[in-house]
Length: 123
Image 1 (tube, rainbow, N blue to C red):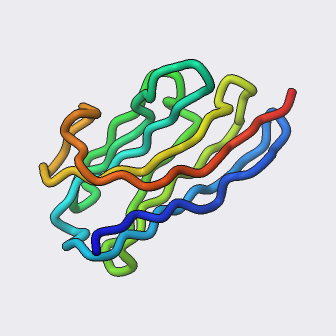
Image 2: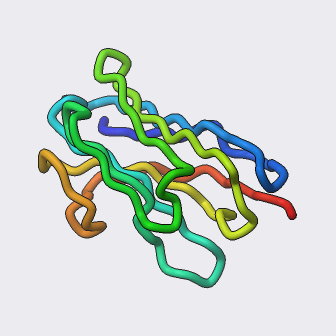
Image 3: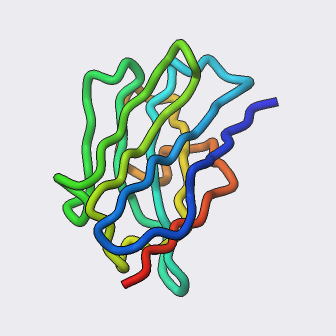
């Protein structure tokens, strides 16, 4: 059974940090590009960050560039999102996703999704 399970969300004050993790099972993790997306109430799910299947390439949404870092450990079948200098507008449910392509930032090219983890940033 293919599964992505996110963890690490929570409530944090503005300026604080959180580290999200996404553990994958049931797939050849190193053959998938991984991405993080987020969805705020009343808004569409949007791209946050992506990493290529071997970690050589990364890409970030402008809104998080310089504050968030995506990384992966293929030996642990896990992708991470380190979030620093958090802002209230970062409040959302964060989802990790897997794509069978080597690298993509396009939401429709991700076909495996986790259940999401809530991140709330208070002002």
